[in-house]
Length: 518
RNA sequence: GAGCCCGUAGCUCAGCGGUAGAGCAUUCGCCUUUUAAGCGAGGGGCCCUGGGUUCGAAUCCCAGCGGGCUCACCA
Image (cartoon, rainbow, N blue to C red):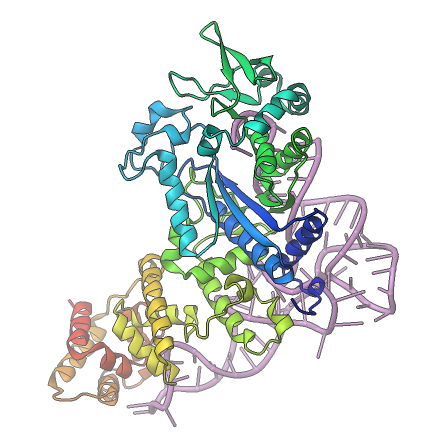
């Protein structure tokens, strides 16, 4: 602890942490602050879920900075929830069709790698979270229900059954009101989660009755025999897990309000809350897996660093942001700018620097030595996917000597840049076919290069290019260079040809030139 | 219907009390080799409108007008 006035820090995770600290400080003997992120493992992990965990981590980081509370981040998987729709991104969608309405944790995993379908999705999410070294406590809803860890709250809900029903019913349509129950019995034979009308039989012993195939059946609400309808489930968790903080997307604002009302009939536990805006695609529509729009976590990490993804998630969570491929280079460059500005910032100003939050205040000593967009331009200009060629050119371009760490960082982003180039730039490049005059000139160039012997320097190559240019286009040397760029690289300008030929290598150059005059 | 967000350069956006900013686009200048892998210089703004707070508002508050999204079945 120190004398910094954290209220002056504008960074949102600090403001959230201050809000949380104020709330939690009023609780007697409070030592551990619990934060929840919840999600449904109905398919591949969603980038929104990931963003929520990442952002909650940033709040935790700040809370630790401004207080002595210890923290517990719960990542809660609602895996007793039923499968409603077969996801398209699963390898064997047809096999899931029979499992509609079955709890996700009771569906086998047909990839054969995991214990259940939910387990598979849970593990995919965990692998992302681990990649970012988050410290979290993973909880499976199914396990908690079955082991009776929610029993106390379930009985409390049954005790206040009428009051809770009265909160929810006005929000439902008439048809749904008939069948609504906060308790969803799980059929012992079919394992399906039933949405059926329920009658309370015995509040004290936790028994309800429901109608199935014209027969009344009785069941316990406890011990995993019933699942709670989700808004009630959410409220129940706040009490059972003693949640102090939870953020959610704006789509859940009405649900949060409703769950808060319900919570007042359980143990009155309502977490400190922040709502964030949703991610949109390049056309401004909500990102959803079924549409296949926007970006997945994997896609981002394929073309950009994990830091650039963190930075994107950090920025303006309360503002709707378009998430598409163009965001990656920009975020990569923003990261580098912030990294460089950090050096000259004092300790208070640093708290407002996103990098402080992204790296949990442990900022690395180096980053990549060149802007990503700059590197992309270079790769585009060279029109090559050869790591070594690119690296050699970066060395020439930067002039300065690179440290070992610089080289390592550079190697990493070169790989990313090559992938980005192949996917998003290369398909749009159109190389021009040379006209007869140009063909002759290139042929001449070829012959001249073939004549060269021994060690060939950049200047040798450059001289030849000029020599041929002067012979063939004596009055318009400029056009000669433009033509070469158009024909070789599909652009109006490019690298100095002498240097490029030198780095690219004689045999490669000959191949490249031959290609154009075939 | 209710809620949330956004209106800043031609486009995409950053800035969020103290001189109006970036990238892309655009205009002009610069290749017989010394980073054209671009470089240099410029143009372009009632910061949606109206009120309030303030010494001072693009920034904070209120109202309005546009645009978008979300929820109202499920989660």
